[in-house]
Image 1 (tube, one colour):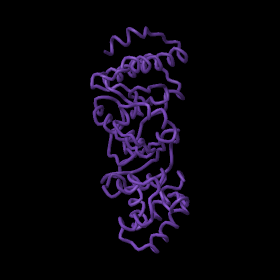
Image 2 (cartoon, one colour):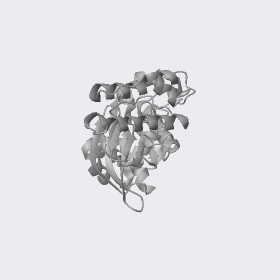
Image 3 (tube, helix red, strand yellow):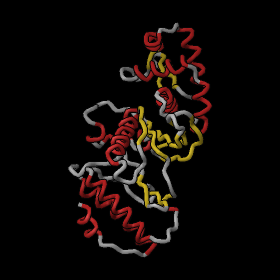
Image 4 (cartoon, rainbow, N blue to C red):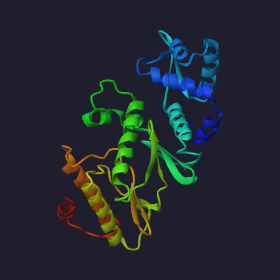
Length: 288
């Protein structure tokens, strides 16, 4: 589905979106949403809903249950479309392009957005698939909800990342946050190349730049908590740090350990690849 999302989006009718919205809304109360509930939400007749559901099923946007009762639910593919539709209606996105990044916890597409057709990206979070059990154990991540769904967890991750970017940008070198909806975040296009796959000529200077960004983020009350060479991008002006959904504040009970791990990951990479050694405790003391 991922590579076909632009085509499926364009071919989904307004009534199709309305049915998806109905299922999303009623999933708060049902594991499988009865067709009668969809009818009550949309005010469409059953025959029309069945026709719409058939088309949605062809694109693998919905799942059907024929157990104790017939019911439906959406999954991430439909959630992508609902978020995208909301962002298009708000003018945050004008066009969606190629899939440029696939990870266990996200899908990233090129987009243009705003009145200036700005080059940007949209990141669809997928935390619910890869780390459901891990996230469920974190009270601060899921607040007080007893019932957790994968869609809800991805939505929380997107909100946390967007909120962090709003705090950090522009003082810290991070993507500029544009908008978010559900599990999707629109942000400026990341400049440069991934640190892990780049050979740099002045590694000491770049190491200082990265550590400086960690310090600036800490002073603004944010610790990345999952930093490595895979979410730092290098460009001629410096660096840009991405992937902030798991960030914590300095008041978090594990803040010291998470900050230490972030710094250790970066120092270990530069030591391994460029033979640059720094005393980790001195670096930590300079940050805090």
